[in-house]
Length: 255
Ligand code: 1GP
Image (cartoon, rainbow, N blue to C red):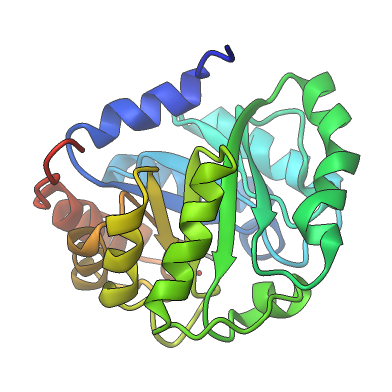
């Protein structure tokens, strides 16, 4: 038996109370020192962990610098959200070890993971196995990851993929609309997935307000990710608003 690591236990513990907010930092947009400052504000506003990654990240040196800057400023766990091998930093606490379930390219399903696995082990990163599903056009992530178009409203398809991720032994499922998406994953799709899977459900892409975050959580999202809105400034105010909305959401029976 593999024991759950520290970061996973921390997230599950937090989820017993209410859905959580995660702040995504893209090293190519707010890397280095700027990331440290931004995360300090995010921590003050009540975010629960920091994710570091971006669809086009190609410099591990930049990821390293960003993670180190964040670790200097905050106590929160830093979780890698890698686009490729370049997204693996030895300085993080954990890594979403993820497979892009609807990619048409086996590289993003299993090959990148196989190439990166020895490094993840060498660095001693905590592994958080995650099934990643890009819905709708998916923005840059959809293009780079060669995701087959899965319409946002095709709830039963999303639910089937998410259930497959659970049966394959993943610990998390992520429904992604793409960074900066004009519309987030619809609540009907989130709730269809929620009815099928017991795993912690991560939802992100296009969530900009407390209202958006609350709506996603009421539909069944456990972890709500925001990047763009935090990068645009007013991080504390925006995250505060979302955290407040999430704290009001009652957990369903048995969750
Ligand atoms: C992208 O889901 C995340 O991977 C965050 O999206 O930048 O739209 O908040 P936003």
